[in-house]
Image 1 (cartoon, rainbow, N blue to C red):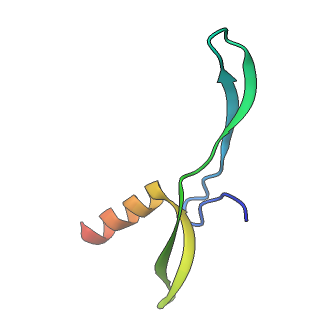
Image 2: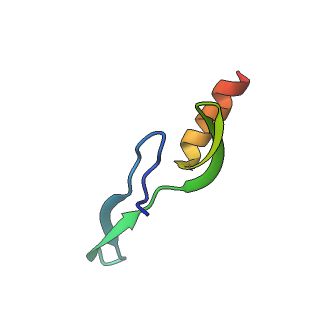
Length: 63
């Protein structure tokens, strides 16, 4: 299963890990995916979405 947000489409970012001597090795920043149940077309469905997208959806519902 790929680490992609179903709502926002966010993916893992890549870059360099830097040691104290500034030696560069490749690393990855994964998305903070959460499995949540959301209503899709009136039916509850399990979706993997990022924590940021979940927070945004909750704010839109309450505000």
